[in-house]
Image (cartoon, rainbow, N blue to C red; front, side, top):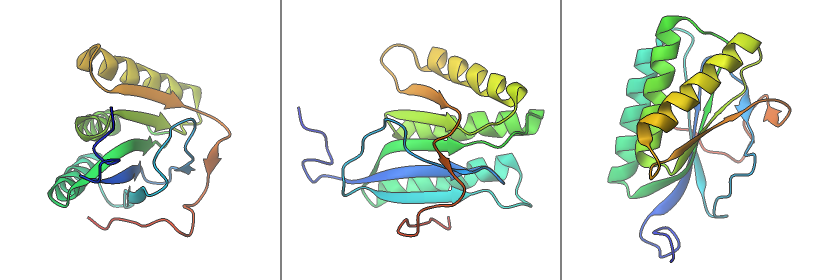
Length: 156
C-alpha cells in the first residue's frame, strides 16, 4: 500500500523541535522521502516549556491546513529535568505523536536526564497502545551542533 505522500496527496515534512540549548539531532535510522522538507522550531531562551508546546501545536495545525504531512518527528531535549520542563516536553511529544507516525526523543547528556527521557517514552508508548505511534529514545554521537544550511525553519 502506498502512503499519502507517495500518492501526491500531502507534502512530506520532517518536524524538528529543539528545546533551548539542545543540539541539532541527526536522523538515526528514520527514513523519509527525498522530497521531505524540514520544519524546525527552537525554544527561545525566555520561552517557557508551555509556550513552546503551544507554538508547536500552532505549527502542526498550520501544517495540516497546508496539507503537509509529518513523516518524522524529532524532539531534541536539553538536560533540564524540573517539573515544568518535563510537563512541557510531554506536551510537545503528544502533539508530535498526534500527527506523525513516530517521535524520537534525543540528546540528553546526563544520566538523570536520559532516565527521564526513557520514562517519558515508556509512558507515551503505554498511553498510545499497540496500534499507535512509537516513541524512540536516542542518545550519543549522531548529533550535530547546528542545523544543516539547506534546511528550512519555522517561525511559528
